[in-house]
Length: 197
Image (cartoon, rainbow, N blue to C red):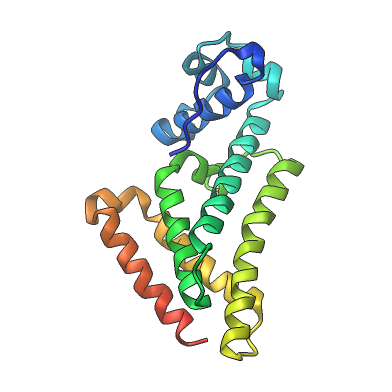
């Protein structure tokens, strides 16, 4: 999970703390419990502080999403690093995706559009594009290795939708399985895809 230490705000950490608090509210309360006032309360600042730094709840939510996309991109890159086989690299990336989603439900809810009213900011757009381009690059590498004529975008969407489907079940995970079973099941599903390219 993403944790931001609450340190002295005059050093420029308040915006990060507000984003972390917003993600926490979303994870615990959902959109119904989300407000700038609640974010301020959890951060330990005046109720006007979130509005002063972000202007609106929609912009704050966009920052939560951008942070989530950047963490996802970092986790996918780390998981794929050092893995030589392109198929195994895609599977590692998929596992990183599901773990990121399960560890950061507040971020994930706004990253993937299950929360309405997010401002369209350049930061969020660029972070989302960065995360998706990683999957496209992994797809292109896998296609080239297999000698396939499949379109990398098609494979990227297929793999992304597969792991996204698992991630969307995150609210049910504790009721139906533990994380090891979910990741094992995801591994099997992605292996079916990558072995048929």
